[in-house]
Amino acid sequence: MMKKIEHIGIAVSDIETSRKLFAKIFGKDSYKSEKVESEGVITSFFQIGESKIELVAATTEESIIFKYLEKWGEGMHHVAFTVEDIEQEITRLKREGIRLLNDVPKKGADNKIICFLHPEDTNGVLIELCQETF
Ligand code: ZN
Image (cartoon, rainbow, N blue to C red; front, side, top):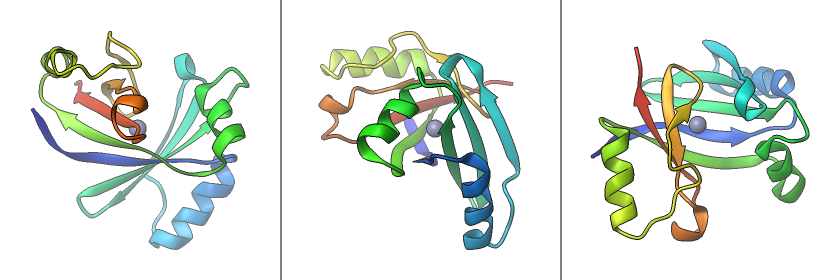
């Protein structure tokens, strides 16, 4: 079951420049920056009340974010939802005929295991599922 929006992801070219920009916009600094080596990305998280915003930039040219930025430029990238049991959710979605970009959940930033739904099956909206790990 999807419980709530966990965060909204914004693709940016330069993490430091954008971290400063969004700190100005939100009136507070990010609470965390984290590299996810396996994905070739660096992230910065902002807490805005109950909501989170994740800035995500590429650290290598092989990164999917690098390719995304080349094609689409900076901007809104994905919406992430908290799920209680990611395996159960993957099974449910597959049964509904929704494809996933990764069938096996992988380690994401901010103590999460994550997977992405195929945007061709979601009206072009990139949806991330997150399960908290402790
Ligand atoms: Zn995310």
